[in-house]
Length: 525
Image (cartoon, rainbow, N blue to C red):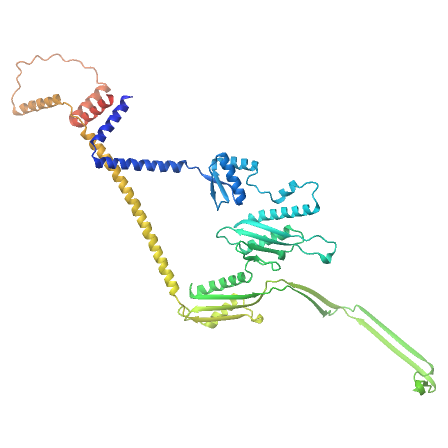
């Protein structure tokens, strides 16, 4: 084993032998904390980043994907209630290709059903397969809408008939399963209705029914409206009136309630209006004249027996008749109006204002404001009621107190966590400082003194000579040799300068020099 390694382990052993039992306990705890921290850091850094290989899977497809991944020995995780399978990101694309090649994770639906249809399929099989394919394609398209996790489409396609009076319009029902916490807006429901009705020939938008997983009817057949119908209109009017009153009396000082009745009838109205065309020439004009002049028996007479006319003699007679026909132009306007269902038949608005906040307001002025904001029409029987009374603030005060208590508790928990983290950090810092201090102390105690006798004698001789010079006693020069001739010394080199510097350092601080020499000797041994 190399000498450096042996010397290191020897130092460690000597240092450990000099520690007391509490010191050894602290050192073991510090090493354990460091090992645990390093292990946690390595685990976090070595954990692979997961990415979804398939999402929105049915239970059967998810089970097939998991079985395939386990067979290949790939680590995976499940999310979104088992509908999403996560794999390491570096293997994402390879696994997606390999799973697709084996047919795992892909459901046979949509137009892919038509690929396996044989030549001997009957008309009924072809019709049913085509209907299933169309339903699958519509379901996949609806699932792509934000907030929809799954969808199912059922089509009711009537048989084609050559008799027009027996033709029946197709209908459809759509089931949507929404993601957790999501709600399908009215615009999205209308988009689903338009999507389905446009994909099926001769289907009207009113023939599509949309239902969610909670059993709520978002669009009923024959209505074609979005979710809620009247409730959506009531919410819109309520929000408009409430926003106006919040600016007048302040938030929380007014309550608005709207009840609306929507018309469910579809009405067709045909109106024809005729007006004279002033200044226009007549369309046609005709005049006929009839005249008669001559002698003979006059027309008429006295009736005799058995209603037989009795002549009354002969005489002259004449006859004249004139007829005139004038056809004047007339303006004709024909108007055909179709009123779709969903219009407001009647609504009522009720507003209650806090007595304290609305003490200086006029109820008549508030009623006029609410009437204008809600679009009230007295002709159709709309009603507006505005009143002022004291509000009960018990629940609001309790909620405010509960919110304040929750905030205080959260602040206390954050402070406790901060204090706990600070204490842990301080304890770790103290442990590190204590270990460093003990190691330094043990190293200082292991230092051995080096014999510096010659240096001490030299220093004593220099001090004695200095004292004699100060006392004025001439030095004994009887036995001193003659002064030799000056010797020419070589020029000073860099090594000489370093030796002089080391000698000066040894003179100034011999303890530091001795410690350094001891360490060099230990390493060399």
